[in-house]
Image 1 (cartoon, rainbow, N blue to C red):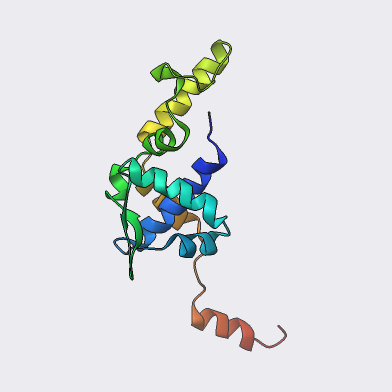
Image 2: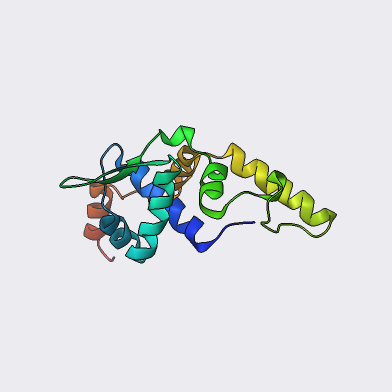
Amino acid sequence: MLGSKAYGYAVQALLDLAERAPRFCSIQEIAHRHGLPRHFLGRVLRTLTREGILQARKGPGGGVRLARPPEALTLYEIKRAIDGLDPADEEPIPCALDERGAALCAELRAFLRATTLADLLACRSRSRPRPSSPSLSASRRSRPGS
């Protein structure tokens, strides 16, 4: 139930677009920045456009961008758009075969419904290393005996 490779690519691309909003970005730009296969990513992004998660524009300066703010896009909505409906919706995506699995799937589903693209952006920005201060770096280099 964690998601397909297409779902992973979708989340990477949507985070990329959220960081560059409201600018349109080409599929080639996104694929290049993340080392993703362009044609496969193109199919994923067309699905997201068809589902109303992205807006697309053709021509110079065109590409795709988020159709709504990152706060309004949940991981559950993205997963449903890419991987289809989940067992709670009585569709054929297998999830659990026993009670423990069913409980785990319910927890995961709740997490996906409660987590937005904005939440992931916040986590990403907190986990990125901060650039060191130029004065601190210079003082380290100029210390005798270093």
